[in-house]
Amino acid sequence: MSLHDIIDAVSRVTGVTAVAVVDYEGIPIESRATLGQVENERLCAWAAELGRVAADTVAEWEGGPLQVTMFEASMGSLMLADVGRGYLVIAGDPALNAGMLRLEVDRAAEILRQFLGAGLGSRDAEGRATA
Image 1 (cartoon, rainbow, N blue to C red):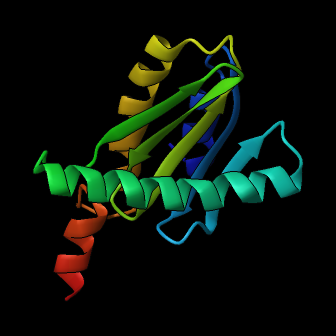
Image 2: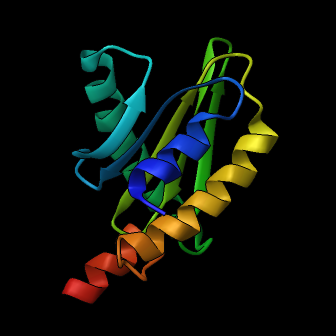
């Protein structure tokens, strides 16, 4: 299964408007979006920042490594999954099927962790491994 196939599977969930795999700095590794290029770049940057905030929050909370976080608003949703070397980020419109997306994200995140050769579950774990 290729990176393209993984993103394609996630993008088929009802209501998904963009899917990207980004590194921890927000640099896109692979993406698919119905958004314009500027919006796609902004989504990738947001993913990095939101991922940092979420990872720091669970670290303070002592909740273990970040796995998945979701932001819901009246006009759409964002879901992030830590994939060991970055994030799988998904944007959705109000029709997003969040339950089906979560199932697909769990599958995709596991494959991406292996695909990226990370073997690490969080940004913090990667920092410790390279320190």
